[in-house]
Image (tube, rainbow, N blue to C red; front, top):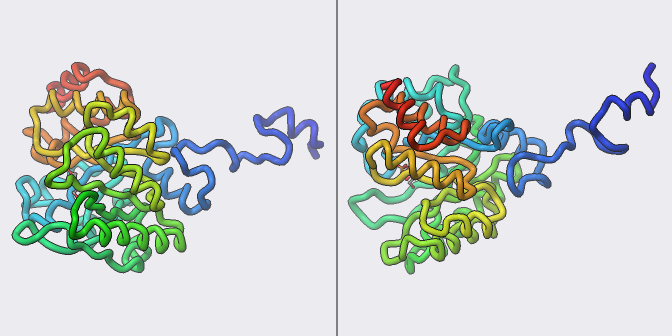
Length: 289
Ligand code: 5RP
């Protein structure tokens, strides 16, 4: 039987330290439980520390948004290229075969539609997240909304309480306030409020000075894509975000509304995980489409 010295020699770990205690690749997660870390590792690739999340939760306020009329035709062929799927429970249960076994970031709040007043959301039952074996829950914060700011912060806070009980991370989604400037001050404020209230991941938008948003947020920041852009610009957006410290993207319209969604998600993947430049990403897109 090997003695202690042999064991120490063959290992990279010090006395009292085991392989399981290696430093963790997700920002701000070193002190979390094993279940949290396991779920975060399903979302953030341990080799690159990054993620490509595919967002197709838009229907929960917009109904059959352009590109999402037929999830079976648009989204299913993309799943193999995504690290994580962000969707609602209804779409998950009806359209996504569980055999795909992809990590899910479940849209865990619900409220109004685009036809009425936005942001008046409540959180859905945590048991749904457990039953559906999700890897994270997403809850929106409406920072700057005079009417619903407090309610949405409380939603996030409660979701974190519940998620912590079951080892399920929470992603805070920063909605853009109507009258707020889309700048580093606003996104920095909103992102930090998410993290201060316990979010394990923050989703926000890219802006000038984004590196300051990332530096002041003690958990990984991923960016939404926003409205559809030409593919070249969308890849530039991904590249700049990663360069400025984003831990990945949670992109929807710029993928599923692309003229070739499968080519686009692979190009985004190349930029996020393989450090492709926007030009190389565009060439990959053109080769694949
Ligand atoms: C809205 C969301 C959307 O999923 C988000 O906006 C991502 O989609 P897109 O890249 O199309 O902006 O979380 O609350």
